[in-house]
Length: 298
Image (cartoon, rainbow, N blue to C red; front, top):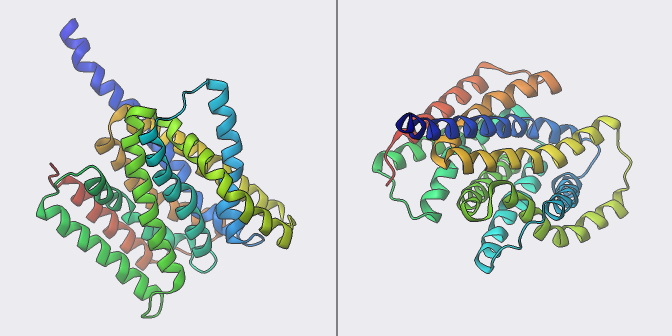
Protein backbone atom coordinates (compact mmCIF):
# COMPACT_ATOMS: atom_id res chain seq x y z
CA UNK A 1 0.00 0.00 0.00
CA UNK A 2 2.85 2.34 0.81
CA UNK A 3 4.41 1.86 -2.63
CA UNK A 4 1.11 2.50 -4.40
CA UNK A 5 0.52 5.64 -2.33
CA UNK A 6 3.99 6.97 -3.14
CA UNK A 7 3.43 6.32 -6.83
CA UNK A 8 0.01 7.95 -6.98
CA UNK A 9 0.89 11.12 -5.06
CA UNK A 10 2.92 12.73 -7.87
CA UNK A 11 0.25 11.91 -10.48
CA UNK A 12 -2.50 13.38 -8.32
CA UNK A 13 -0.47 16.55 -7.76
CA UNK A 14 0.18 16.77 -11.48
CA UNK A 15 -3.51 16.37 -12.25
CA UNK A 16 -4.40 19.13 -9.81
CA UNK A 17 -1.74 21.34 -11.31
CA UNK A 18 -3.07 20.77 -14.82
CA UNK A 19 -6.62 21.62 -13.73
CA UNK A 20 -5.51 24.83 -12.05
CA UNK A 21 -3.33 25.67 -15.04
CA UNK A 22 -6.23 25.14 -17.44
CA UNK A 23 -8.44 27.39 -15.32
CA UNK A 24 -5.81 30.12 -15.51
CA UNK A 25 -5.45 29.74 -19.28
CA UNK A 26 -9.23 29.78 -19.77
CA UNK A 27 -9.42 33.08 -17.88
CA UNK A 28 -6.44 34.51 -19.78
CA UNK A 29 -7.99 33.60 -23.14
CA UNK A 30 -10.71 36.22 -22.67
CA UNK A 31 -8.19 38.99 -21.93
CA UNK A 32 -7.72 40.28 -25.49
CA UNK A 33 -11.43 40.26 -26.45
CA UNK A 34 -12.34 41.96 -23.15
CA UNK A 35 -9.54 44.48 -23.61
CA UNK A 36 -10.74 45.29 -27.12
CA UNK A 37 -14.23 45.98 -25.71
CA UNK A 38 -12.84 48.17 -22.92
CA UNK A 39 -10.61 50.35 -25.14
CA UNK A 40 -13.65 51.45 -27.15
CA UNK A 41 -14.43 53.98 -24.39
CA UNK A 42 -11.25 53.94 -22.31
CA UNK A 43 -7.63 54.77 -22.99
CA UNK A 44 -4.95 52.05 -23.05
CA UNK A 45 -3.45 53.56 -19.89
CA UNK A 46 -6.76 53.28 -18.05
CA UNK A 47 -7.34 49.71 -19.20
CA UNK A 48 -3.75 48.50 -19.04
CA UNK A 49 -2.69 50.14 -15.77
CA UNK A 50 -6.03 50.91 -14.13
CA UNK A 51 -6.90 47.23 -14.09
CA UNK A 52 -3.70 46.49 -12.17
CA UNK A 53 -4.50 49.21 -9.63
CA UNK A 54 -7.92 47.67 -8.93
CA UNK A 55 -6.38 44.19 -8.72
CA UNK A 56 -3.66 45.49 -6.36
CA UNK A 57 -6.26 46.70 -3.85
CA UNK A 58 -7.88 43.26 -3.80
CA UNK A 59 -4.48 41.53 -3.64
CA UNK A 60 -3.44 43.61 -0.62
CA UNK A 61 -6.63 42.66 1.19
CA UNK A 62 -5.97 38.97 0.47
CA UNK A 63 -2.38 39.17 1.73
CA UNK A 64 -3.44 40.93 4.93
CA UNK A 65 -6.31 38.51 5.56
CA UNK A 66 -4.00 35.52 5.04
CA UNK A 67 -1.26 37.11 7.20
CA UNK A 68 1.47 36.39 4.69
CA UNK A 69 5.09 37.04 5.53
CA UNK A 70 6.99 39.83 3.81
CA UNK A 71 9.18 38.74 0.90
CA UNK A 72 12.91 38.52 1.51
CA UNK A 73 15.41 40.88 -0.14
CA UNK A 74 16.14 38.57 -3.09
CA UNK A 75 12.42 37.88 -3.52
CA UNK A 76 11.67 41.62 -3.71
CA UNK A 77 14.09 41.94 -6.64
CA UNK A 78 12.48 39.04 -8.48
CA UNK A 79 9.01 40.39 -7.74
CA UNK A 80 10.03 43.64 -9.41
CA UNK A 81 10.80 41.67 -12.58
CA UNK A 82 7.43 39.89 -12.39
CA UNK A 83 5.63 43.21 -11.85
CA UNK A 84 7.44 44.86 -14.78
CA UNK A 85 6.46 41.98 -17.05
CA UNK A 86 2.89 40.98 -16.18
CA UNK A 87 1.58 44.00 -14.25
CA UNK A 88 3.02 46.85 -16.32
CA UNK A 89 4.43 45.66 -19.64
CA UNK A 90 1.94 43.09 -20.91
CA UNK A 91 -1.30 44.88 -19.89
CA UNK A 92 -0.21 48.28 -21.26
CA UNK A 93 1.21 46.99 -24.55
CA UNK A 94 -1.66 44.59 -25.24
CA UNK A 95 -4.26 47.28 -24.46
CA UNK A 96 -2.55 49.67 -26.85
CA UNK A 97 -2.36 46.96 -29.54
CA UNK A 98 -6.06 46.13 -29.22
CA UNK A 99 -6.92 49.59 -30.55
CA UNK A 100 -5.76 48.56 -34.01
CA UNK A 101 -5.29 44.77 -34.10
CA UNK A 102 -8.25 42.32 -34.05
CA UNK A 103 -8.31 40.18 -30.94
CA UNK A 104 -8.30 36.97 -33.02
CA UNK A 105 -5.07 38.03 -34.74
CA UNK A 106 -3.62 38.89 -31.36
CA UNK A 107 -4.49 35.39 -30.21
CA UNK A 108 -2.31 33.96 -32.98
CA UNK A 109 0.62 36.21 -32.06
CA UNK A 110 0.25 35.19 -28.42
CA UNK A 111 0.38 31.57 -29.54
CA UNK A 112 4.14 32.02 -29.46
CA UNK A 113 4.01 32.84 -25.75
CA UNK A 114 4.52 29.27 -24.39
CA UNK A 115 7.76 28.85 -26.32
CA UNK A 116 8.81 32.39 -25.48
CA UNK A 117 8.24 31.52 -21.83
CA UNK A 118 10.46 28.49 -22.24
CA UNK A 119 13.13 30.68 -23.80
CA UNK A 120 12.93 33.10 -20.90
CA UNK A 121 13.13 30.16 -18.50
CA UNK A 122 16.23 28.91 -20.30
CA UNK A 123 17.93 32.25 -19.72
CA UNK A 124 16.72 32.95 -16.20
CA UNK A 125 17.07 29.38 -14.94
CA UNK A 126 20.34 28.78 -16.84
CA UNK A 127 19.03 25.73 -18.67
CA UNK A 128 20.78 24.39 -21.78
CA UNK A 129 18.32 23.90 -24.66
CA UNK A 130 19.22 21.52 -27.48
CA UNK A 131 19.78 22.77 -31.06
CA UNK A 132 16.35 21.40 -31.98
CA UNK A 133 14.78 23.62 -29.34
CA UNK A 134 16.34 26.73 -30.86
CA UNK A 135 15.35 25.61 -34.35
CA UNK A 136 11.69 25.40 -33.36
CA UNK A 137 12.00 28.76 -31.61
CA UNK A 138 13.18 30.43 -34.81
CA UNK A 139 10.55 28.64 -36.88
CA UNK A 140 7.75 29.68 -34.54
CA UNK A 141 9.01 33.24 -34.36
CA UNK A 142 9.27 33.38 -38.15
CA UNK A 143 5.66 32.22 -38.47
CA UNK A 144 4.50 34.96 -36.11
CA UNK A 145 6.42 37.64 -38.04
CA UNK A 146 5.07 36.30 -41.35
CA UNK A 147 1.51 36.46 -40.07
CA UNK A 148 2.06 40.03 -38.88
CA UNK A 149 3.50 41.00 -42.28
CA UNK A 150 0.59 39.47 -44.19
CA UNK A 151 -1.99 41.13 -41.96
CA UNK A 152 -0.14 44.44 -42.09
CA UNK A 153 -0.03 44.60 -45.88
CA UNK A 154 3.67 43.81 -46.07
CA UNK A 155 4.70 45.82 -43.03
CA UNK A 156 4.57 45.23 -39.31
CA UNK A 157 2.35 47.86 -37.78
CA UNK A 158 2.79 49.44 -34.36
CA UNK A 159 -0.01 47.23 -33.00
CA UNK A 160 1.80 44.05 -34.01
CA UNK A 161 5.07 45.32 -32.53
CA UNK A 162 3.23 46.11 -29.31
CA UNK A 163 1.85 42.57 -29.22
CA UNK A 164 5.30 41.08 -29.76
CA UNK A 165 6.58 43.30 -26.96
CA UNK A 166 3.77 42.12 -24.71
CA UNK A 167 4.78 38.51 -25.44
CA UNK A 168 8.34 39.26 -24.31
CA UNK A 169 7.09 40.95 -21.13
CA UNK A 170 4.71 38.12 -20.27
CA UNK A 171 7.31 35.43 -20.98
CA UNK A 172 9.82 37.00 -18.59
CA UNK A 173 7.13 37.55 -15.96
CA UNK A 174 5.90 33.96 -16.24
CA UNK A 175 9.37 32.43 -16.03
CA UNK A 176 10.51 34.58 -13.12
CA UNK A 177 7.18 34.07 -11.35
CA UNK A 178 7.41 30.32 -11.76
CA UNK A 179 10.87 30.32 -10.21
CA UNK A 180 9.77 32.59 -7.40
CA UNK A 181 6.68 30.51 -6.62
CA UNK A 182 8.96 27.74 -5.31
CA UNK A 183 9.97 29.85 -2.30
CA UNK A 184 7.22 32.45 -1.96
CA UNK A 185 4.17 30.40 -2.97
CA UNK A 186 2.09 30.34 -6.14
CA UNK A 187 -0.70 32.83 -5.50
CA UNK A 188 1.47 35.05 -3.31
CA UNK A 189 3.68 35.91 -6.30
CA UNK A 190 1.04 37.81 -8.28
CA UNK A 191 -0.42 39.41 -5.16
CA UNK A 192 2.91 40.85 -4.05
CA UNK A 193 3.81 41.85 -7.62
CA UNK A 194 0.58 43.86 -7.85
CA UNK A 195 1.17 45.49 -4.46
CA UNK A 196 4.72 46.68 -5.24
CA UNK A 197 3.60 48.00 -8.65
CA UNK A 198 0.62 49.95 -7.26
CA UNK A 199 2.54 53.11 -6.19
CA UNK A 200 3.84 53.53 -9.75
CA UNK A 201 0.33 53.24 -11.19
CA UNK A 202 -1.44 55.89 -9.13
CA UNK A 203 -0.08 58.95 -10.98
CA UNK A 204 -0.63 57.83 -14.62
CA UNK A 205 -4.06 56.39 -13.85
CA UNK A 206 -5.04 59.45 -11.84
CA UNK A 207 -3.96 61.81 -14.62
CA UNK A 208 -5.88 59.75 -17.16
CA UNK A 209 -9.04 59.87 -15.06
CA UNK A 210 -8.64 63.62 -14.55
CA UNK A 211 -8.25 64.18 -18.29
CA UNK A 212 -10.67 61.63 -19.73
CA UNK A 213 -13.13 61.13 -16.88
CA UNK A 214 -14.91 57.89 -16.06
CA UNK A 215 -17.69 58.07 -18.61
CA UNK A 216 -17.92 54.74 -20.42
CA UNK A 217 -20.58 52.32 -21.61
CA UNK A 218 -21.65 49.47 -19.30
CA UNK A 219 -20.04 46.95 -21.67
CA UNK A 220 -16.69 48.73 -21.38
CA UNK A 221 -16.90 48.79 -17.59
CA UNK A 222 -17.83 45.10 -17.48
CA UNK A 223 -14.84 44.30 -19.70
CA UNK A 224 -12.59 46.47 -17.54
CA UNK A 225 -13.69 44.69 -14.36
CA UNK A 226 -13.06 41.33 -16.03
CA UNK A 227 -9.47 42.16 -16.97
CA UNK A 228 -8.91 43.71 -13.53
CA UNK A 229 -10.25 40.87 -11.40
CA UNK A 230 -9.90 37.79 -13.59
CA UNK A 231 -7.10 38.48 -16.10
CA UNK A 232 -4.86 40.37 -13.69
CA UNK A 233 -5.51 38.54 -10.42
CA UNK A 234 -7.68 35.41 -10.27
CA UNK A 235 -6.25 33.97 -13.49
CA UNK A 236 -2.70 34.44 -12.18
CA UNK A 237 -3.58 32.91 -8.82
CA UNK A 238 -4.81 29.79 -10.63
CA UNK A 239 -1.87 29.82 -13.07
CA UNK A 240 0.94 30.19 -10.56
CA UNK A 241 -0.75 27.73 -8.19
CA UNK A 242 -0.90 25.20 -11.02
CA UNK A 243 2.79 25.74 -11.79
CA UNK A 244 3.70 25.27 -8.14
CA UNK A 245 1.57 22.15 -7.63
CA UNK A 246 2.00 20.32 -10.95
CA UNK A 247 5.42 21.47 -12.11
CA UNK A 248 6.40 24.22 -14.53
CA UNK A 249 7.35 22.00 -17.48
CA UNK A 250 4.13 19.97 -17.45
CA UNK A 251 1.57 22.64 -16.58
CA UNK A 252 2.95 25.28 -18.95
CA UNK A 253 1.94 23.07 -21.89
CA UNK A 254 -1.71 23.77 -21.10
CA UNK A 255 -1.08 27.29 -22.38
CA UNK A 256 -1.03 25.90 -25.92
CA UNK A 257 -4.84 25.96 -25.78
CA UNK A 258 -4.97 29.73 -25.22
CA UNK A 259 -4.74 30.66 -28.90
CA UNK A 260 -7.77 28.59 -29.85
CA UNK A 261 -9.77 29.78 -26.86
CA UNK A 262 -8.99 33.42 -27.68
CA UNK A 263 -10.02 33.01 -31.32
CA UNK A 264 -13.27 31.35 -30.28
CA UNK A 265 -13.98 34.07 -27.69
CA UNK A 266 -13.29 36.78 -30.30
CA UNK A 267 -15.87 35.26 -32.61
CA UNK A 268 -18.49 34.91 -29.87
CA UNK A 269 -17.98 38.21 -28.02
CA UNK A 270 -16.89 40.53 -30.81
CA UNK A 271 -18.39 38.92 -33.89
CA UNK A 272 -14.96 38.81 -35.54
CA UNK A 273 -14.74 36.68 -38.67
CA UNK A 274 -12.22 33.88 -38.30
CA UNK A 275 -10.80 33.23 -41.76
CA UNK A 276 -8.75 30.26 -42.94
CA UNK A 277 -5.48 32.20 -42.77
CA UNK A 278 -5.96 33.00 -39.08
CA UNK A 279 -6.94 29.42 -38.29
CA UNK A 280 -4.08 28.06 -40.37
CA UNK A 281 -1.47 30.18 -38.63
CA UNK A 282 -3.00 29.38 -35.25
CA UNK A 283 -2.71 25.64 -35.88
CA UNK A 284 0.80 26.01 -37.29
CA UNK A 285 2.09 28.16 -34.41
CA UNK A 286 0.61 25.90 -31.74
CA UNK A 287 2.01 22.87 -33.56
CA UNK A 288 5.48 24.40 -33.65
CA UNK A 289 5.28 25.25 -29.96
CA UNK A 290 4.12 21.72 -29.13
CA UNK A 291 7.02 20.20 -31.08
CA UNK A 292 9.45 22.65 -29.57
CA UNK A 293 8.42 21.73 -26.07
CA UNK A 294 9.26 18.07 -26.81
CA UNK A 295 12.89 18.88 -27.50
CA UNK A 296 15.46 18.34 -24.83
CA UNK A 297 16.37 20.98 -22.26
CA UNK A 298 18.97 20.19 -19.60
